[in-house]
Image 1 (tube, one colour):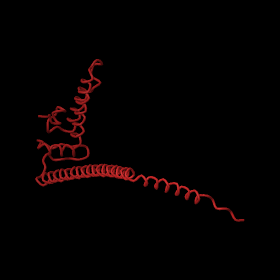
Image 2 (cartoon, helix red, strand yellow):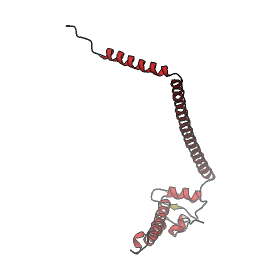
Image 3 (tube, helix red, strand yellow):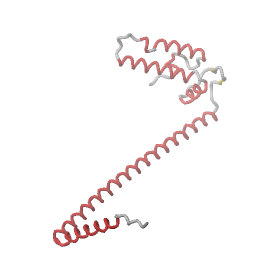
Image 4 (cartoon, helix red, strand yellow):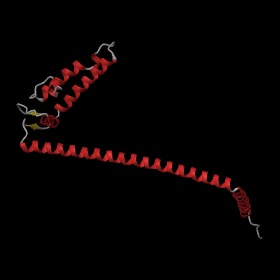
Length: 188
């Protein structure tokens, strides 16, 4: 089982703000990565940094009375006595109404997160379907174009006079385009 934040700092669940501060200071000095020998391996350095970060996170939660109270509620911890911070005083227990509200809020947040995840999955699925449809249409258009080219080639082979007519039309249309593209004479 994972250690509680209290265990990480080496303090009891009913520790005062000063006890938490002292516990943090002692654990921070004990686990700080700079305390390692210069010859320590990368794995040892990473483990020390992770442990130090864990100690820091525990302190950040427990020294703030609001965060501490929420942490205690989530983990079913009922402090034996009240604890305080410089900004507020809290009694050690929650009322049933407060506990119910916190659970309702957590449930609401969980549902919102699930709905968000579902929307993201739907958006990704639609995008994938649209990409697949686009690929299918492009493939279909390429196949259609190839079929038309084959049909025309077959028609030109079976009717060589069509190819001659096509060439004459091209020449006629290019002459006509050059006549129309000449500038008109200026009238002065």
